[in-house]
Length: 90
Image (cartoon, rainbow, N blue to C red; front, side, top):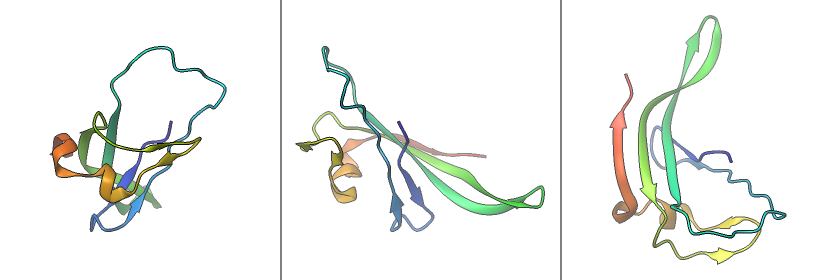
């Protein structure tokens, strides 16, 4: 699974969630969304994406349409009431 990321302004989102349609769900589980705010900076002569903050959301009450893709908008995913924790990275 690839984790979603949000960029500096929180207005630019990139998310990629990969599933395997051959696996059958047999048990309940917690579903969490971990996102990172990234900045671009030069490190050792190369550009790198560096995480500066994170947020952890619960998807427990997220209403989605079940498909082979995650079908929810960013507005739906990043609701303040889903936020479990966040912080800055030094």
